[in-house]
Length: 358
Image 1: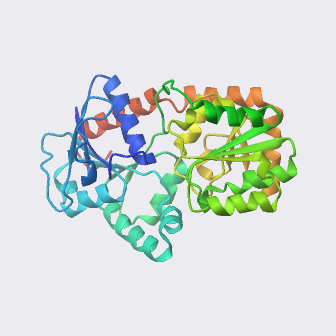
Image 2: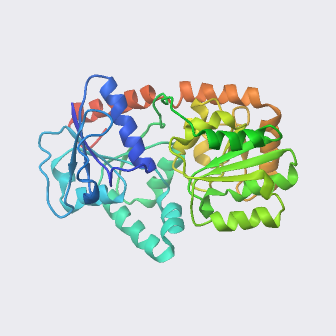
Image 3: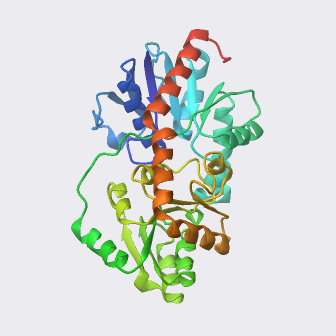
């Protein structure tokens, strides 16, 4: 079986990492010949990823011949629009994976006007596809409502490979350890932007004098969050570490990982935290409630500080219990083997039918 994977670029964005992980899982099944195609000409010198697949840079305005591939699997707007622009969906078996709720994601990231325009373009492209892979029932219901044509949806939960060991920066570990010697430490990781909800963590410190916060990442909200720590007089209990390579290596030094977003396709960093046996506190988005309840993670309502406080209090009072629950979820639900096997079965079904209906 030969699969062409179309992604926007070779970088560490979540959907690209998903694709890289999927390819690793498929290669492990020993049944696949995979090739990566992307549109970032600045990365055209990248010939090899960290696994043996061919990498090709596409010109968005030129048609590529995919006749040697059984399936074209795309993700994100530019690859999806490329498939539609060149009418590849009429000649080849095309599948796309969705990783976000596009309206809330694009409106928040791009603004109302530009976000609306990008939503319309992406919806136009998706309406030409017959096969969409999503990570949850709630995402399936969302796209069933906003897309006008009939689609065949396949729900496959995310999975990640076993995380490799690596070297941490001693000076970073020292800073975290100094906090942890005196406080329970909550961790937030990701772009410091409004929809990520990191203000919940900072405000929690007013409620719990025995807690501290470590934030990993950068973004437009960094200055505002730092200002909030000063306003609430908790600056001495908040560490801003900026971007850290392989941030999961630092999760074992934390007491809980917090996913506070008001919109997510699914947080890969949260699955990494689970694999590292770090207790989870997360917003009660529909996509998360399909997989979690309060017996496995600390669920809370977005922009409800009291709800966050209660969830964090419960998890921090039962760290070993929630650590065990997190690791069970990582091993049994969000494993790479599970994700790759389900994709393999789905590809087989599509190819066997050789039609636009599954």
